[in-house]
Length: 167
Image (cartoon, rainbow, N blue to C red):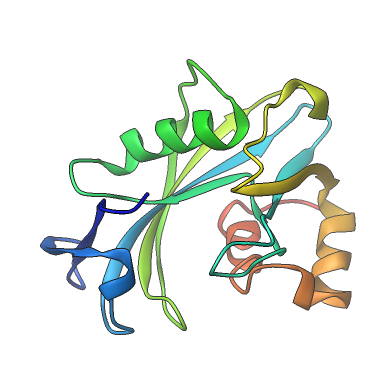
């Protein structure tokens, strides 16, 4: 949303500034929350980013992710994003690992986890954020990432390692 400032942090994830999203520089570090959704079949829910997104349009990534804005915490952000992007309400995600991501974008990502056995039709995707969602078997996902890395956000292998997913 225009007008909402994002949180800029230092190397210790301490807030040092707030900036308009479009005014951030490559050396600015910001906060992202991510939601990793699995089901009882051992599948992972991924979302294909809308083709209109400025970062990684049309690429597969975590089911839900969002940049933390002024006045939000990692947790409040993931609750808001999960409802906006997938229509998930009243979730109580478990706090997962936090990682520091370096590269084209520099940020801390606080991961959250939930287990859900919803069918794809039970999610209400927000088309301006998400083009589609799909359940992936871990083995198939790893094969897809290795054979077609251009179809996935650059950091997609990291959560798989973080969550020690089994093939």
